[in-house]
Image (cartoon, rainbow, N blue to C red; front, side):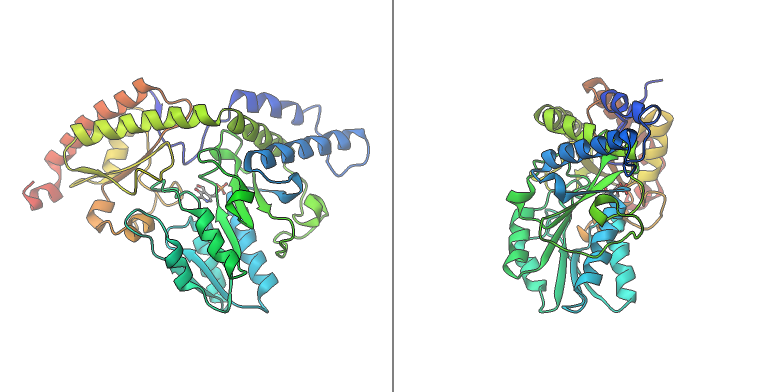
Length: 389
Ligand SMILES: Cc1ncc(COP(=O)(O)O)c(C=O)c1O
């Protein structure tokens, strides 16, 4: 049976070039980067090199990159670090209804401690406009956090304009760029962001490694306390192999950016065009214009996305119904709800995400399989009968 993985927004395989770079740091180059002898210095140099590689991908200075255990830790650090540092100034945070749970649940935790959080709506394109942000700003706003690319519907936010609004008010601006990294052009200086979260496993690097960009001159409290690693800002012995892998993955993402984007966009557009033309009663969620090159969030009316997922799985195809973290929950997706998709249609939504190892034959196999699966499911669907479809 053919195996087709179309869930690159959930995670990506580690590229061979990345793995080869990592391997020596598991075995002969295992020194602790804090140790003062040569074996330690060798590891410290490797961490510094990775910092340069990640910084180069986003137009930052290496000193502005702080390695973490992934995107979730970076998001938590921003929320709790900014809240603690700036609590004397104010207790209001602005974010959006469509953030990843790493951001939403951190904000909800702060609310229990007396902070106030505004969760911005999105427009029909799936985006927040500068006007929507401007209207939510208060005198006591201390942090604005708006994701660069949504993990479910792939919409790209106008971060440069949104960050400009924050700057005009002197408010810290953070963006969760976990899904954006390597998929949309990012230059932190041009964007004008103060803080930015990243993760290695979405760009063909290892899981459990990420980074927070902290613009020079920006200060937030530490989140992890302990040793003096990461310029005394993030304690804990460095995840040496993970960091080396992240660095190499970032280097490749920069080197192959145009090729990667073109490849994903071509295959994604082919998938969308075929599905919309050949399977009736289907629609794409969110704008096609400002969108992650590999993302296709498609609703199949009158059937359940979970049933599609299971049938596709049976045919060797991996897709997701929502973000990976919430796809085992029966709650309707908070992102599609915010987009205004009716609840029964939310349940018929599947997220396909294409990556570097996807081929045109894979996409055609998925669409051909989908045509059968969808028509069989619609034949037996109770929703279908009720609607007289
Ligand atoms: C937008 C976004 N933010 C944060 C995360 C969490 O990153 P990590 O898996 O590295 O903790 C994810 C992962 O899916 C994500 O898509």
